[in-house]
Length: 108
Image (cartoon, rainbow, N blue to C red; front, side, top):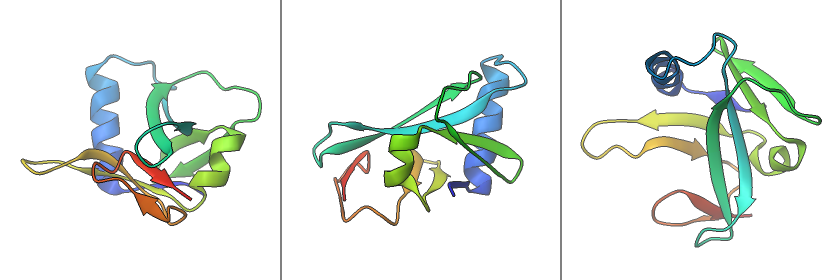
């Protein structure tokens, strides 16, 4: 399962509204090759399901991940940290054995 913190949910809902996204918009998360640690996180708003997508709902927020990325993200919580020292959206991934300083890439 992939979960979302209350802070991430509230920020995502605010962005969806601010960007005038359709009512059926969800958070799509994934992993791609790259970054200083080998794998990079990706996140976007979407409203189109794709073949092989895994769907989760947490705190009323729909989170979708492709089948390949799910293997790397199982158990991950999407969080949001704001303020002066905030990082924005961040992935709290229990599968990551090593992360880079910016928190945007990882290795397993």
